[in-house]
Image (cartoon, one colour):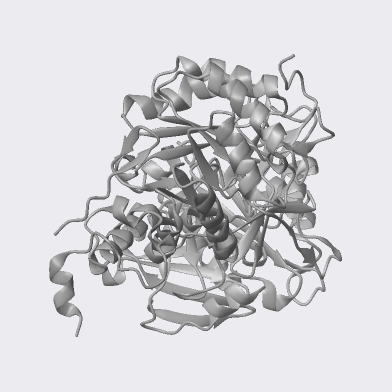
Length: 325
Length: 277
């Protein structure tokens, strides 16, 4: 029996729930030499900015226990080159593409949305809210509901109605649910979480911070429990909102945790650095796990862990009861 | 995995990997997952390929030194263990179209990548001369093999325990002059590559350098292994050592700016209007 892996990100149907996390698949071409990108539920691009960005100085990466720190600084080609070269390449091949955008002001996000509104091949727009707000002393938009909502409301009003706007939230906040609620109230069709929490490592030989930028985003299995907690809390508060869960997914079991916590799409990031084929493997493992638990549809597992203790799981296959002694 | 052995101060691993061996060109590298299935080490380690042989359907040999827990784990692997390899990665060394006199410069285990290159150059009728160095005699890699292959081999050590006392760059000008070299190929730490490039530019001959930058993925997606390189159009870009490299034309690499974002690099902070008004 095959499990129905289809999922909906707002009203957009994806063939399966696995997507690449923003900034972990570069332009897409790099991964295409390993596998057919059509086998992804969707490919999420790196965060596209207005102007080309050279990013941060090196060293940009430090390995930490069960994770890594990065401070790439949104290195990328800028919107012009993206629309000229990268998006058409994906669109011509019919690859489902979630375009991530990042800006320093509300006006910059709005301009990016305007440029992308008529571009073919945008399946959904993900708003990277972990960018420093130039108009608020460089504090990131995601740290406060009102700043995040301002960006989302502006982008939502510009973007075509049939392209879902996804707000990407950061875990470095006192109350992620309030930021999530503010984004949804401002018109976000879906939420994705988590962006990298900030971390730091110190080189004990050089007696200096390991990263040139001093602090960096922590990713990998180290952040998995933090991310699952965020998805759980937001799904509990806003059960009707589609969630993209991500943070340290290395296996189908990790992805299953996100689904059970309430995510209908799961992002794979750091695992791609370790294993270029990670997305396909995780999708297969997730399907096997669903089948083993007697779940015929992925949709039936979304948020399943929220059911009260003692209540029977719904939607179980009849023949699975035979295995119960 | 086939064999593991110590070579002087280094470890050499031979791995049966027909797919990699078949597509290999000198200058390619592979990335290796370290620590086993449930490891806490999430980034791959990148190594240049030292040798490719046709035995067992195709083997590749890697040379490395143990610097951290990842390479220490790798050094403990034994015959018949399996290893997770991705490759061949990167852009290989370009070879001269016509026979030319080539000087190959390597220090520490960087010289490992030069031997398959020398084979390819010799097959094209090139003259090959080696300059190989290290801090001490134990860290000079492949001196014997270089002597067998090359017209001349110059060895240098900083403590004078083998060959000339000094660095490879001290010996390079006279080797270039004596051999009437047409081109230089180098693989070494960044500071040495910078000096080698300066020497080659003084002689006005092309130099190809293979750089070692710390990288997480090796396949071009993590964007951590970047360095400033001047492009065909004269503009400096932060390019990935793994995807655009690891081999670059030496004079194109802005060695003095490695580890920074030069102010005139494409997309550098403050370089023009970054935000719409």
